Length: 162
Ligand SMILES: [Zn+2]
Ligand SMILES: [Zn+2]
Ligand SMILES: [Zn+2]
Image (cartoon, rainbow, N blue to C red; front, top):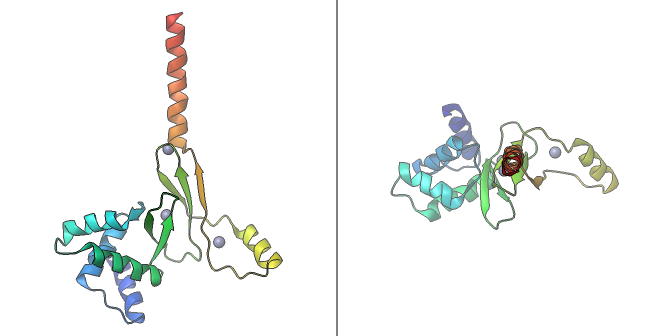
């Protein structure tokens, strides 16, 4: 964690920005919740626990700055809320997301599955790809398992009635 903060600090310095204590508190929250996809408000509430004096506007500006510097990616899963997702170090392109329409969970696919598609687009459209967003909407394995076991219970209780 400290090493990553150090690298983010350098990234800011190289663009002549400072990692102020408030910015650092925001970065720490993002690192601690790397698996989550937090909105600006979520980040604000978590930063506030560490730095009670901080305001939502400051957190918001920091997130926008981190987005500009490509430390985070901004993503919207179709619910109208912008979420901030730490960029994986060394990744050329943004990772893919699996959004469950039943429980709302968001899983990540780190591997870039679009290599072949990218080749087609670059060749046939003469388009130089810099990045992409890929979000799948569906039912996660947890919900599938749950509905599977519910069905079973249902059958068993039906048999019981008979
Ligand atoms: Zn993500
Ligand atoms: Zn890609
Ligand atoms: Zn689910």
